Amino acid sequence: MAMTISEKILAAHAGKTEVHPDELIEAKVDFALGNDITAPLAIEAFRQSGAEKVFDRDRIALVPDHFVPNKDIASAMQAKILRDFAREQGLTYYFEVGRAGIEHALLPEQGLVLPGDVVIGADSHTCTYGALGAFATGVGSTDLAAAMVTGKIWFRVPHSLKFVFRGKRRRWFGGKDLILYTIGKIGVDGARYRAMEFAGEVIEELPMSDRFSMCNMAIEAGAKVGIVAPDSITEAYITGRAKRGYQVFQSDPDAFYETVYDWDVSELEPMVALPHSPEKVLPVTELSEIAIDQVVIGSCTNGRLEDLRQAAEILKGRKVARDVRCIIIPATQEIYRQALAEGLIETFVAAEAAVSTPTCGPCLGGHMGILAAGERAVATTNRNFPGRMGHIDSEVYLSNPPVAAASAVAGRIVHPDEV
Image 1 (tube, helix red, strand yellow):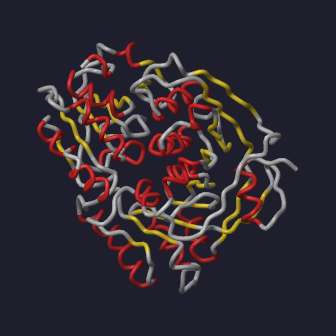
Image 2 (image 1 turned 30 degrees about the horizontal axis):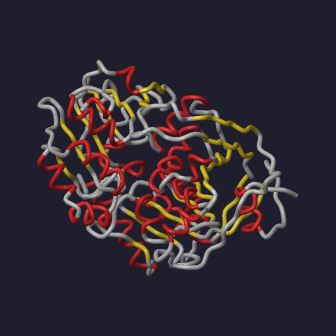
């Protein structure tokens, strides 16, 4: 039977020769993760189960990243639960402040999630790792607890959708724009419990950072996973990083897809998602009169070094508009270090932007950039629901890093070419 890459990965981890959409299976887990919001609940459920030891101390990561450095006593207590559990269980991969960063940028960087893996995380954006050719998905905290005990989890095998992107990308148009365009076309429930497989000549030339951005936001279309078949770009990224062996899977040429979307993106320009939904997408040039109060460049979607380089290209020799706050957050400590070495941080500070230690920060309305009532932000984050970044009467516009940086300079939403 011909199968998609997602079906092949699940079949291999369920000990089957083949699986079918809607089939219920139990699959082995290669890696599991939790953060300072979700892991405390999982740890509580773990203890209630009566288990004494995790299934494998080398296959679990705990990453405090949402409210760190701790913003108050409650967040400090949450982080302490992770720290104490990691010590008790002897977890190899507990990442403390100053050595870590945002989990979905950190784990690929560390070579902990790999092609062909089944990865679960108690965070919806765990689907980011599909960029490596892994079946990666978010789960609830109790599911994470069960996996920490047994090393297994059950799935309903998802139907697969294929998205083929053709043509040649224009300058300033990247992975963030591709996924925003896609969500704008199919809606926030257009891939509900589906595997979104990204393919075509545009994807084949897309850097890993852009692939991560695309798979990261598959969940915003309701998908179970977003996935890109491994190729030479994938191999170049994981070479020297991988902490263990891995297996590469590819979709069969005659695999069945519930729907195939085929789009030429040659004439598309950068996209912006308007409040209050990632599906309310328009080209940036249709939004040039919208004044803003804040810009956030970072998050698990667009806080990688390539994103910071693009922002710096726009901000170099320029200043953030007088009435705008620009907050830039490298996604990991290593990205921060590289940005320092390349002079990117100097560029940001000279432009009068604020640069933060790695954290999820304002993305979820945590800290480091909360919006007041009536304020409007452009952010490279992944969600813009009411109250996502602060007051329920604030507004968030989602964009790629060049658009965000250009908007910080102009004080309104603009195409990068305008500055």
